[in-house]
Image (cartoon, rainbow, N blue to C red; front, side, top):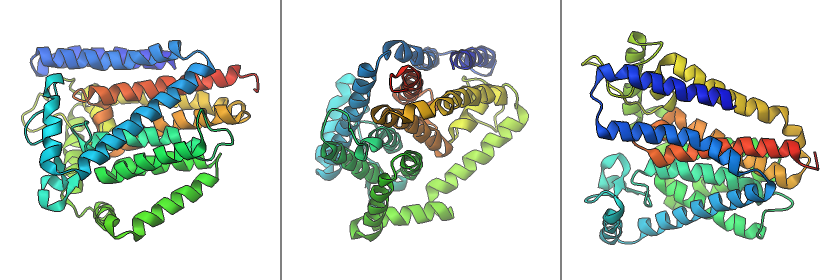
Length: 361
């Protein structure tokens, strides 16, 4: 997958340079674009570092541990008094965290209820992170040999992740975790029982009825957030009909009646790099999964390796599903999310490579 990823970097640089005619080159834009390129290059750093099973297992534990801590912080900040939560988050200004009214609410309306953000600023970003981490943790719930710790510890971590994910009210992130878990359940059917129990709890408990209502409203296109997304998709398609091949770059749109920015990662890539850039990106993803499918039988022969294989590839699938309804994994303004995406690509490739090397294979 190195070649298409390098091709994607080259395409991004080309689109960036050509697109400067549409807007000024500011220091902020230059820094964000450099961070974007470094995030993609981080894939190769991960592949080079994770060259044995021990490091791969430690990376899985590290990812889930960090995600569980993020979930615990998100839950704590959600349930403590709002003024105390806001003061705690404002105290992070010394490390560049935004200040002021940082708490987030459904449709920006406090009367509709708060959304968990942890320290992620944006609840959808936190939801996407938790979906990825949940996908990595999910195989350990039913694997015959869970990594490092007792299965119940993995279960507790997954429960915290799921609870915080619900509190973000990020519907796309929840669908992403479900999609990844269904893939994993093909190898670990008992995971379906966990999913069914979780779904029943959400459907039955009185405290989760607002969450269920939000899903129903989204499916019907009846809520403001979904309607705004539809408007963004329409505007993005107008831009792409005018600049289909190479997009308009990263600096801005050349016409006054169109703009950059859409809650869909794939349309966002096409806006900036055109359908050619989107095709190169999809080719890179296809190569990652094509190589995985080619060697999947070898990975499935070893229970420990299969749990890692499905977990990391499930994490990538979660991100790809999130990209249908959100853009932060490919948005210059969300550098940490970009890094997580390309780190997961690197870990997925490393898992496939180590599956081929595995003595059990």
